[in-house]
Structure formats: structure tokens, C-alpha cells
Length: 236
Image 1 (cartoon, rainbow, N blue to C red):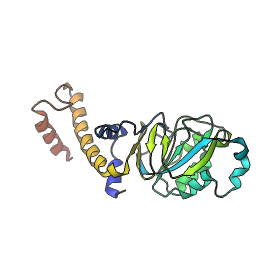
Image 2 (cartoon, one colour; image 1 turned 60 degrees about the vertical axis):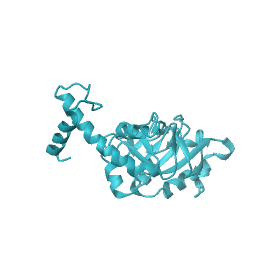
Image 3 (cartoon, rainbow, N blue to C red; image 1 turned 180 degrees about the horizontal axis):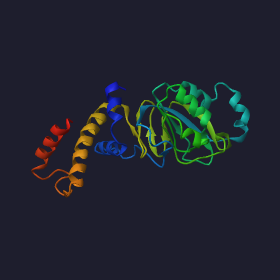
Image 4 (cartoon, helix red, strand yellow; image 1 turned 135 degrees about the vertical axis):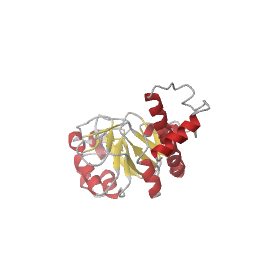
């Protein structure tokens, strides 16, 4: 990801990004039902690195599997590149944890940009204090081994009904997480910045008492001039 694109995505909302994606016919890029454990952090931005679970088969998913240094869950935590976002396909099942505080702490100290699951995290009160964004559906104390079997690293997955391909750009804010196809990232970032500037102008106008009719979308003749003047004053 180009550093300028990352900088732009740090300053725009997932709502704006969803609208920009919708204009291109992409309707399913918002990861459903995940929420930030630490909503006061800045935006999460990074390329996707994925981990996929399947339903656990009991004879292959006993506690001893973690002794294997190549266990996919443990391996993913050590292999996820700094600056990337680990996205976990937990089959939208939060009855058992996708990971816990120790593994998330390891991601954080390695410089990973964030972690997302469509399941749940155990040790969630600890994770909520970390300086790295983390998103899940709800807290879940049982170990992942009770229901989930880690099976594959860095291949296409579904997470909360959103398709996620390795390298797609993942953006999270206080509302949730959106996935931008990698080839559209620069274009979407540029458009989202411009949309944000205009929507900030619209918000100021509405708070000053103006109707949204003719303003949003801007069909009244005076809007373009008023926006240009406001933008000049604001230096945006």
C-alpha cells in the first residue's frame, strides 16, 4: 500500500468508504456484526493477512496440537507482517474464542496494525486496553479448540459475510470494518477524502439551520460556490 493512501485512509470513515465502494457496485465489503474493543483508537489501516477456521474435528483438535510449532493459529500470529491486519474467519461463531490476550499481545508487539474476527476474543478486558485495534462480535471465554480448527493461512476467506482476499486493504473505525479490494485502494482513498471534505461542509450547513434539500446531494445553484468559499476559509 502506498504510504499516501494509508495516510488518507487514516482520516476517513468506514461509512464514507462504504458509499465509495457502493458507487462501484460493491455492496458486501463491510464486515457484519464486529465491533471495536477499544473504540478510542485511531483508524486501523493495513493489508489483510488471513486465518481460516473450520468446525473442529475432535480427534484432530486436542489441547496438545499447540505443541506443534507449525500449528496454523500460532504460525499466523508469528507470520502476519508488521503493518498488516490479521483477519480471522471464525465462521461467524463466537461460542469459542478466535484468540486470546496473549496472542493479540504478540501481534501488537510485532507491529501488526490490527486484528479482526467474526467470532469472539477471550481475555477481552485485557485486549480492550491494548494500543492496537481489535474487532470482534462479543467476548468468548472457551478456547478456540472446543469449536474451531485452524486450517489455512493467507488465502481468500469470508469474514462477517465480507469477502477478504490477502492484500485487500482493511480499514476499521469506531463503527466497524470495511475491506477495500487492493486494486481500488488508491482510487477509493482519494475519493473518500474529497467526500469527507464535502460532507464536513454539509454538516456545518445543516447545524447552521439549512435544509438538506438541494444541499445533499448538491442540486441548488448556490452550493458549489458556498462550498468553494468554505473550503478556502478552512484550508481544505
